[in-house]
Image (cartoon, rainbow, N blue to C red):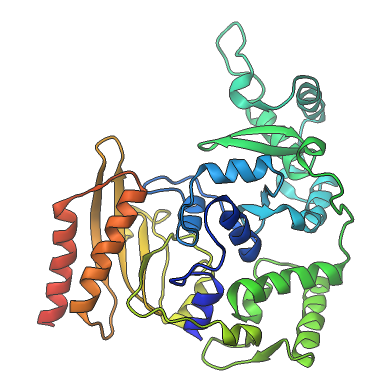
Length: 386
C-alpha cells in the first residue's frame, strides 16, 4: 500500500506528469491542490512540492499558469493553487463568506470594500504597494486592519482574484478578468461537491481513510452525501476496503496497477507535501509520526524548526532540519535524525548525499557545507555502533 500511495502522488523515478510548464499544470490537476506557504528557510512549500514531481520545474511556472488561466489561488484546507477546471467547487465557500456566515468575515467595512473594488475596476490590477501613503507617512487603508480585512473578504467571496505573485506579494484583479471564457460557474449540488472531494482524494492518494475524506469538512449533510458517494463507489468496484492503512481505509482499484519500482530513491520532502499532510494517515500507513515544529516553542522542539521528512524507497527513514543561506550560496544542515528500523547504511548514504546536493542546488546554494555532511555521517556512525 505504501508504494501505491507514493506512485499515486507522482513521486516515482519516471514522473507521470511530464516536465516544465505543462508538467506543472498536470501535476496540480492530478493532486487537486498545492498548498501555499510563506516560510522560506528553504524553498517555499508550493515550489518544493512541484519540484519533487516535475523535471525542469521553475518558480515562474505558477504565475505563467495563472496568466494562462489554467490555475487559480483559493482556499482548500489552506491557501492553495488549484486547477481552474475545479473553480465551481470553490463557489459554496465563496457564497457562505459573502453571506457573512464565516466569523472572520462577518464584520467588514462595506465602504472600504466598495472603494477597493471601484479602484481595481478603474485602474486595473493592484497590489498593496501600489497605493500611496498619506501626507503624514501613514499607510493607507490597504495596510490598516479594517482595510486588509475588506480586501481579504473581496478575495474570499470571489469578487477579486490573485492574478500574480512577486515572491509572497500578491496582485489582485477582478475575478471576471481572471477567469477563462466558457468556464462552468454553476454552484455544485451537495452530491456533486462530495463526489468532487472523493474523486480528488482517490486520484491523488490511491489509498485513503474515511477520516481523510471528511478532513476539516463540517456538517452532517456533507458527511451523509460523502457516505453515499463512498457506498456507490464501493458497489461499482471503483474502490474497495483494505487493511493495513488505518481504520476505515479504502484503495483505488485502478491504482493497484500503478505501483512502481522505487528502491534506492531518496527524496527530501516539504512538511506541507501532499503525501505527508494528513498526519494520521501518514502514521497508519508509513509508521511515521511527524509534526512540523516551527509552531512549537524552541525549548520543546525535538527535531528542529523546519525539519523535513526524508523518504527512502517506500519508508520515511529520517528528518533533516536545513537552512539555505542564499546570499552565501551555502546550504546548512542544522540537525539530522534517523528513524528506528532496519536501514542499509552503505546504500543509503550515497543516495542521500546526492539527493541533498540536488536539493541544495535547487535552493540556489550549491555549496553543501562540509559540516552538514559531517552531521549526517555522525548520525549514521551512531546507528552502526548501536
